Length: 411
Image 1 (cartoon, rainbow, N blue to C red):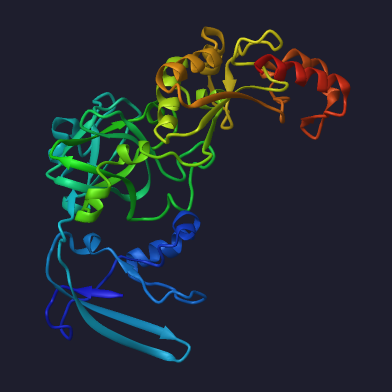
Image 2 (image 1 turned 90 degrees about the vertical axis):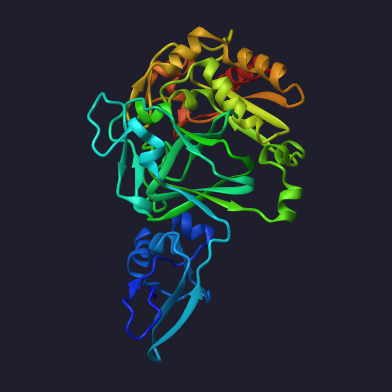
C-alpha cells in the first residue's frame, strides 16, 4: 500500500504507508515482529491464509497532523495475476490530540546526548518522529505533559519500538504502573517488544486541562527493566453518550465488582524486583490490586520446604539474600523476612484500607528451593531423599505431617 498527498495520482510521489497486517490480539502480542515491521516500513501485507478483507493504516506515522485529501494506491499480487487499485481518502482530525513536543516538556531535564551523572532524559529525532528514552541507569526527574483538553478522552501511549515500563498519573492522583509485554521477569524480549509503531490504551479519563506526569520506575534504575521508547501521547475524545455513562475510569471500577475475582501475589517474588520493603510493597502491590475492586486478595508467604516470610513457629524465617532467575543477588527478601511479619503487616493494611475485601493466606505446595539450600528450611536440607522430580513426595507420612503443620499455623 502506497500513499501520496499530491492531488494527481498519475504524477504523485508515492511512499510506503505504515500499515498493520492485522489487529488481532494474539498476533499483536505474539505474532511475528518481522511481518509486522515489514508492513510498517514498506507497506507490504501478506493476506494468504487469512479471512480478513481489510488492512489498517495509521496516517499519523506518515503524514502527522496534516488534514488533506490523500491518494492511496494498493498493489495486489495473487495467483491469478497482479493488479493495482487507486482511490482517495479525506484525513480529518476528529478532535484527536497528539502530544509529542518532548524538548518543550523536558526543558533542562532533556538532552540529545546526556552524560553519566547529569540525570537527564534523551530525546531523539525531531517533531512527530521524536521519542524519549533513558540512556543511563540513574534517577531522572518526572515529566509533566500539559493536557490541552476539556472533556472525556481515551488516553493512548505511542511507542517507537520496544515496550514501555514506567509510572503515570493525571494531576495529583496516585501513580499507576504501565508495563507492556516483554518487560517482565519472564520475558526480557518478545515479539511484541520487537514491533515498531505500537499504541497501547491506558485509560478513559475526564480531563480539564491539568497535566499527565510520567516517572521512572525504580527497577529501571536498579535493574534491567528498560523504560522504553515513548513517541507520543494520544487523546481521543469520547462521544456524548460515552461521556455521560463513564464519568471517570476510577468511578466506573468502584461502582461494580467483577464476580469472583481473586487476586494472588507472592511477596518473595515481588521483593526480588530489587527495591521493596514491607511498607512499599503494601502501598504499591496491595493498593494496585485494590483498584480492581476484587472480592479477595490472597498472599503466599511460605512454600513448603522453603523459609518463611511471615514469622512462623514451624518454619525458619527468610534471613538470607536471594538470587533470581538471572543470577542477580539482592537482599530485599532477607530484609522483608527479618524486619517485619509481612502477613501481619498486610492484614493490618487491608483492615485499615479495604475492610470489605477478604484477605487470605495460602501456602505453596510444590518446588522447594533445592538448588539454593540457603533459602530452604532445615527440614528440606535434612531430607532431600523426600524429594522426587523436584517436588516433595506427599505419600511419605513425615512430609504430610510437615506440610499440615504449616497449613494449620496460618489457618
